[in-house]
Image 1 (cartoon, rainbow, N blue to C red):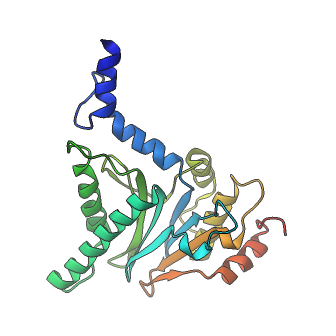
Image 2 (image 1 turned 90 degrees about the vertical axis):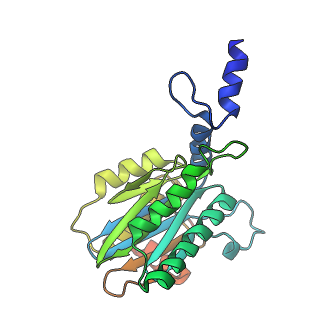
Length: 244
C-alpha cells in the first residue's frame, strides 16, 4: 500500500507528499543538474553570461548548440537542462519583451520579464496532465542603467544573484564564485571570473569552440556575443585553455 502511495506522489504533479514535497519538481531539478553548466556574473559595468556547450560528438555542427540567447536588445538568457524546454521558455520571454515594447513603448524590465517567465513555469507545477520544465535559466540585462541577474527554478521561483551557476557541477562552480567574486570587478574581470569558474571543474581546460559567452554592458545596454576568436585570445591570456 505504501508503495502505491509513493508511486502516486511520484506521478502526480498536483499531489503533495505527506512531507510537503512535489516530487516531479524535484525530478525536474535533477534534469537541470544533468545539463552542462552556465554561469552568470554581475559587475558594475554590466553582466556576463558564459556557458559550456561542448559537443557530444565531433560530427555535430557547433553552431547548432545554442546555450545563450538574445531576448531583447538589453536582455540575454543562458540555460541548463533540457534544451527543448529552454527554447519554449525563451519564446515566452521574447514574446513578452515585444508585447511590452508595443504596449508601453519601452523595453521590459529584467525583473518583470523574469517574473513573467517564472509565472509561466509555475503553472506547470499545478496542472494535471503536464510536467514541470526540466530547465533553469539565467536572465541577465540592464534595467534603468543598472545590471541585473536572475535565476529561474523549475518550481517557478526567481532568485536575484551577483554571481551564480546552474547545471552540472553547480556546487563546485558556485563555491569558486563565492570565493573569487568581488563587487568592484569590471566587465572584463567578470568575464575572466566566468571562464575560470567553468574551467575549475574541467580538468582538461576550456576550448574556445566549447564555450559560449555574451555580455550586456551598462554604457550601450546592448546584448553582444563574444566571438570564438576573442574567446580563444582570452583563454590564452588567462592560461586556462585546453591542450592543443
